[in-house]
Length: 318
Length: 300
Image (tube, rainbow over all chains, first blue to last red; front, side, top):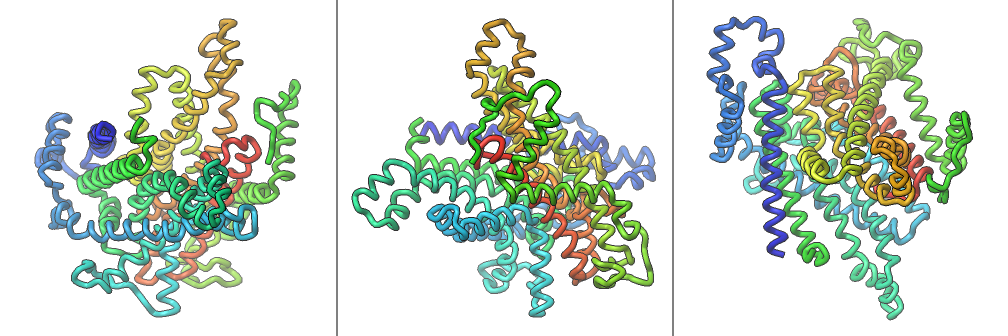
């Protein structure tokens, strides 16, 4: 087990380094000239050569690329995520203030997806090819197709139209004002949760169908065990392993999906900041946020892998 | 469930490929009528996109200042936006952009990934090891975030959005096709071909590639749906194809920018168009999968 953990962590560290290089390449080298990205093609042509040079020096962009890369990495390790061009707040402060809201949304959405997806998968797998199963399958395919942010916009509109309700605009922490906080996170969490639930129901169904056919499940039935207990205690634990892995992969969907969904709901979370950074072409904020999101994604997947290894000796002992 | 594995199917006689394709479509209708129905819907959407200038009642960029932000009516079925442009026409023209981007992204991304996967699976060794690491790095970004970063870095526009989405599709094509090739490589007919001295190129393109067509088709149809959603999200976040050209994503974004409360018809119709299109392609993909290769059920 320890060697597995060590290997997984070492590989994770390597991945994060690779990710940082890739982010750097995409955000700094691809645009050709970062000033074009900052000022826009029109603004760029209005700058004089001297202005361009002084901006470049100010931003530390006239150094060789590897020096810039190392400086960036050093900043990140120190916890300095730089400043936005358009706001006075530092990116680190912004992450600390807005991050918890997005983290709450992500966590709540995962919980919701399991609460909805697993029961649906069980019903679907125990009565395959019945009307209920067909409806569930169609609904899950439908949910895979619907863009979450659109559902979000419809929910906001519907609540406003029929109930005259609008979620509060200002951020509120879970500890100071739990009621306002809940109103902020429940909408995005619901939309993102249903999106994942569709995948989880599909995967859970096929995985459960496979496990039910195994010999040990038949043995349990032959012993005369109540069918309900066989499913709950014998079949389900094994059937859930691939679902846990899938849930980890889906975290990418949640992290990325929260950006448009937070915009649709107007939630003051980190996803909304990411949207603002993209909308305003704020290259450095974007670079740091993209790195942060990807690093978090890698980290969460390591945690998922270790959980799986903890639960499944076949992987742990390999 | 079909029992015809691709390897068991009789090969079409000389010059009857068209007939074989038609037979395939016929089989889709008989075996999976529901998927065939969605296939027809998908075909209709593609046809509407191609025939947009004929089908759309108004030019998509023409403002009618006497009918600004009007709800659906007899003259404007889907209503009009803030500056009096007809929503129905814009949704129809939007399908052009969405489908062009999605098909472009699949043709470049999924295909490139598939060919890469073919090479990885066939040659193995160090090349494969290095490629797998690169693919893992690519996969450690959530799709949309990678596409956002690339689209933003390259600046908005049709070409850059296609490239941005295509890059996110590469690892999936690579992984799936690689695993298919790995199992094919060990098959006896490949060994026999190698035994009689077939070259690498001949083995790869003549013996292994044809068997990869089925998984590739399935992957490509699924990726079309994914690409449409990513394109819409990019448009919604303002890094897609810039206005005034209508796309479903930037129409939704415009609706939100219109004011505190967006008019419902500006929200409902573009989103419904996305959902219907993605649903049609996904269900068509499901049908093709069940038809071509039941073994792959649930794996992609």
